[in-house]
Length: 381
Image (cartoon, rainbow, N blue to C red; front, side, top):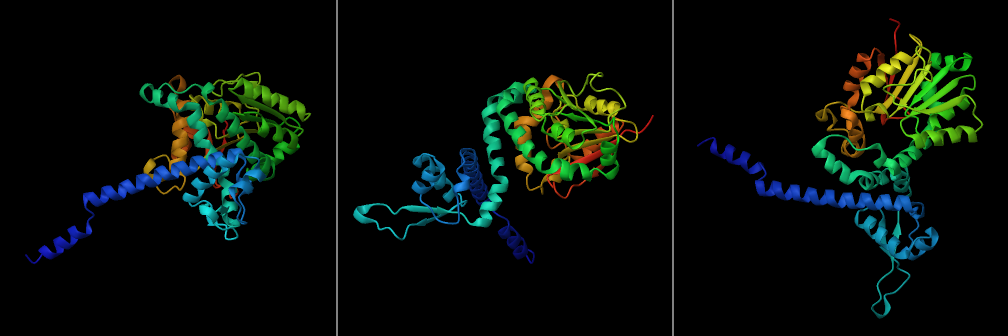
C-alpha cells in the first residue's frame, strides 16, 4: 500500500493511448500542411514569384502586376504561404471596407527570412518534379524491385544539371580543387600531359571549367545519357575548348581507348556513385585508370551515416531519404544493382572504396557542409 501512490503517480505521468493518438493525429495534420506549403513554395519558385516578396507590404494585385503572373494564382499562392507562416498577412489600413467590401490583404516578408528562403527556394521544386517524373513507376517498382528507367527522369535531370552548374561555377575551380591539396593542383598546372576524368559529367560544366582552368591538361567526361553528352560537347565547342572530350559510356566498363589505365591525375565523381547499378565495378575502374600512388580520386557524396538510427538527428534526413526513394535508389536497382541510394553513408562508402583497392580519407569541406569528399589514391601493386 505504501507504494501505491508512487505507482499511481507514474501512471498519471504516462500519456494515455487516447492522448497519444490525438498528438499523433495533430502531427499528421502538421505534416500534411507542411507538404502543401512545400509544394506551393515550389510553384512560387518556378513561376518567379519569390523575388517580389519584400519587407514592404504589397497587395496581390500589386505583386501580380510586378511579376507578370495572373492575380488569382498570386492570391492563392500567398494565401497558402500566409497560413503556412511563410509570409506575413496584414490589412491595408489606408482603405476602408465600404458597402461591405473586404479589406485588401497585404503580404510581406522580413529581409532575413527572405534571405534564408532564397538560399533554399530551388529545393522546393525537387519533390514535385520527382513525383511528376516517377511517382507511378516507383509505386509499381516497389513490388518488383527492378529499378526505374533512366528515361523517366528527363526533366529532373535537366533541373539537377542546372543546380550542379550553379554550384560548380561558384566553387569548383576557386575552392574545391585547391582543397584537394597543393600536390593535386601542382600536377594539373605543371604537367604537360596531365589528365582529368569526370564520371557522370552531365552536360559538361565541371569538365569544361577544369579544361579552362588547366589548359595544359586533357579532360575527359563520361556519362550514360547521350543527350547530356551531346550538350556537353556543344558547350565545349561554344567556349572554344579543344582539350576536353566527351563520350557516352558505362562507368562500370569504361572504354580503354578513351580511359587508358594508370594515367589519370584527377578523377572526379559528383553525387554519382550511389546512383550506379554497379558501383563496385565503377570504383574498380577508377582504380584502374588512376595514376598509381599520385593520382587522386575525389568522390563527392552526401554527408550521412549508413544506418538510419545514426541519421535520426540529421536535419535533412527525411528529405534526403525521400529523394533517394524517388530517384537514387530506383536508379541503382536497374540491371540487378544493389540500389545504394543517396543515404548509403560514410561507413559503407569507405568500405566499398577500400574494397576496390583505393586508400581513402574523408575531407570535410568548410564551404560545403552538405557533402563529404572522399579523397582516394590507388597504391602501386
